[in-house]
Each structure stands twice: as C-alpha cells, then as structure tokens.
Length: 468
Image 1 (cartoon, rainbow, N blue to C red):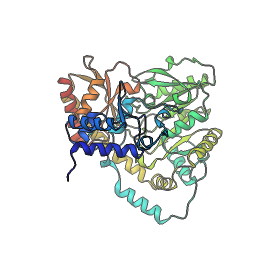
Image 2: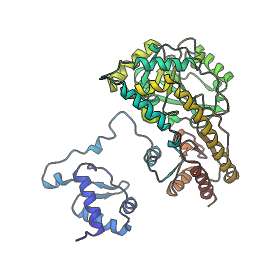
Image 3: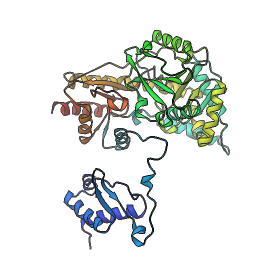
Image 4: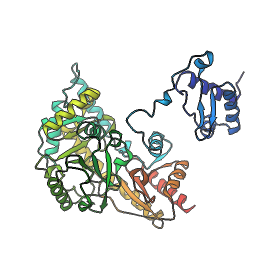
C-alpha cells in the first residue's frame, strides 16, 4: 500500500534524526524547502511536522524555526544525547557570513546560471591534454609516500622556471607548495602574525568574504582604491612596527578587476620598504590577461625579501588539482613548511606530479593562450549584453584580465533584494556586500564559468528583475 505523502516526510526526517545527521539543537529545513523537496503543498508538510512534534522529536522555537529536541535514544530512556549544536560556535574559526554560505551551496546547483563562480568553464578545461598527462604520470609511477616538507623538488624547480619567465628569479628552496592560495593565507595567519596584528587590505576585497585572519584575532583595516589600485597615501601605521601586514591583489583584482599600474606598484614597494610593512601579493590571476601582459609583479621589484608571493593553478587550469605556492625568504618558507606538515603532511603527490608535467612540458603556456582567446570572446559577449540590457540601470569598467566585471547598480535599486530575487529566478551572482562594499549598489559578475548563451540570458534576466 502506497504511503501518504506526509508520511514520506515524517520517515525522511526521522531517519535524519536517528542517524545523527540532524543533531539535537539543530534547525531542520523550512516548510517551503521541504515542500519543494517532496513536491507537495505546505499543508502536507505542516501535517508531517505536527506528527513529529507530537512524537516529541521537534519543536517550533521563536526566531529559530523548527529545531530537533530529541532523538530515538533520548526518547527510549532517561539518558541524554550529546548536543553538538552547542559546540559548533565554540571553535576559534568564525563561520562565513550567511550570504557567502548560501552562495557556496548554490554554486553546486547545475540548474542555476552561474554568474558568480571564480573559476573557468568546463568548456575551457583541456580534457584531452589532462588525460594524456595523467596517463604519462601513471605510467611512470613508483610507490610514493609523503613528500618533503616544501613539496616535490621537481615541481618546485618547475615553478622556479615558470616564475623566472615572469621576471622573478626564485630558487626552489624559497618555494613552498600548498593546496591553493587559501591554504597559504591560513598558514601565514597562524605562523607569521601576532594576535592583534593589523592586516591592511583593499576595499572592496575578496578577503572580506573569508574569516581566515579574523578567526586568529587579526584586525582588518580597509584601504581605498582608485582605477590604479591601492591609494598608497591612505596607508597609516596604526599599530607598532612589526604588527602589521598588507594583503593585495594588484593584478586583475578580485572583485573589481582593477590592474595596478607600474608607477603605483613602485610607489607601493618604496613605501612598504621604508615603513617595514610586509606585503602578501596574491597573484593568482596574473596569467589571465587579455589585451596585453600586466606590469611586473611586486615580488620582482622586491630587493629586501619584503614580499610573500602567492600563485596557483586553480584559476588558470583546474581548481581540482589543489596546487598553489608561496614564495618568500628561506627562513619564512621553512617556518610555513613545518606548519603545513603539521596540518596535512603535504599536498597530494599525484597532483604535484601532474602539475610538474603541465609546467615543464610547455603545455601550460599553450593552454594559457587558448584560455586568453576564449576569455576575450566571453568578455565581449558579457559587455555586449550589458550594453544592450543594463546601460540604463548600471555602470561598469572594462576589465583587461581575469574574469570579473564590477557593476554599479544605480541607487534606486537594493542589491540584497536583487540577489535574492535573481536566485529565485535561477540566476546566481555575488553582491558587493560580501566584499565589504557598503553602499549596497555593486555586484560582481563572472563571465568565466557560464556558457555564452547563459551569459546573455543571465544578463537579460538581471535587467528584467531590475525593471520589474
């Protein structure tokens, strides 16, 4: 006999609770969400929830929604069960803001038009070349264990050669292989900075969407930007020497796409050397130029070991490889390498071998040429659609690299409402608020991931939402 629909919901929730997947103290999905999951009316959901309440498993709480108050074990006797939800806020690492969590979850939904993702489209993934390289690596495999603390020496030599072609003369001993630039920031935050240090960053900044520095007790101090990058004269040493650091994305900045020009870079390097202000240069977008190659990196101008340089293959090749690197003085790299060994005993050996083949074979540079050409097409498609549909409602600058367009919506529209409405219509984009842009009038639009048709449709839909 077929079960009534409400009973299916009851059984589903009971199973989640009995397995411990929905812990005591945790909030269950909303009525609207459950109605969508089971394709039923909300009245059917309410019937199911009333039965579960009668069983003593859940309870409606003002301001918290419906939460789990018991499980099958606690109902069977007098013993109590661990309430893990009392622990989830006790750790030192702060949670992402709710909007960022919502975006992270939505980015795995293939039914959405993804104008938010900070990665390249599967259409640009070099599948045949990757298959060939993985096959080549597998044919040469020998039993492998943990890599040395700084990473595979062949990979570090390949990174050294790659950096040399970009104006940086770096020895392999001054390179640490990490699992992407985010791990680099985490290692720096726990290994090099004192609690209470000031981290100077651009406003807006990608770093504001993370809690990597705040979670270990650092204070973020925003620096205004213009079309040349950070305004150097806005940097003031509010803390004593040795307790501040500057984090910057000078090349195709995230989220604005700004490219810091050579003169501004020279000015910034001179100021930071004079004030003994260390720099973290996040340069993961450098290879994604479209019109002309960018100015030399801050690291290439660094004569005193003042710059920690971050690079990665995640934005240009594949985020799934989880391969990035930190460049710095040997003493600093040794310190960070020790911390990395304590945290994960080194990045994947297989990924390191694959990355070595990409960088040393010449295939990586060939791949970049293809990516740049496709990004030009994508940028052109996005700009054409913006000019056609959003000219009356927004302004923007044309990026010369990367894959982000920083769009200012005219003041009569509220971007938070725009974000929610767009998501309900199947369109995902990033509101400027997650980057600490406080006017509430900006969105970051990515043209790197969605297909050309999706870019056109998404921008058209955005214009319709604003019109209505």
